[in-house]
Image 1 (cartoon, rainbow, N blue to C red):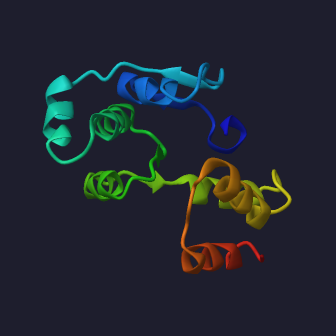
Image 2: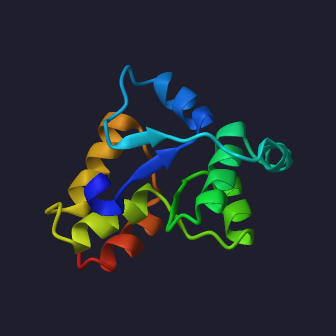
Image 3: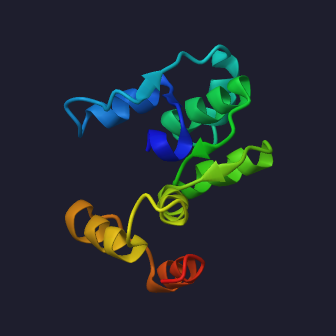
Length: 132
């Protein structure tokens, strides 16, 4: 991921979410405290705490991208003029940069092994953009 997006910073709430299913986080993930808890609370009225902290942190850091798949969080982030990329977008970037040989194969593995489901229409449309 770091080779695709560079440094990946996450807020504490996202770290907590990730640690529920992963014993250890990769070294390329760094935890950063959000400086404006009031802004987080405002966002948390519309989205989950992890998304609220991530959006607030992305704004504070003037992040190049906000990595987020959750629909409500993406919508809120876009209203805040943040550039949002999801897992599918990261896979497409990796394919375009030659870091993976097949986006289709990786998406299939994620579906089978991690339960990450994308509609066939969305998958096929995205895969066409990388010639698959």
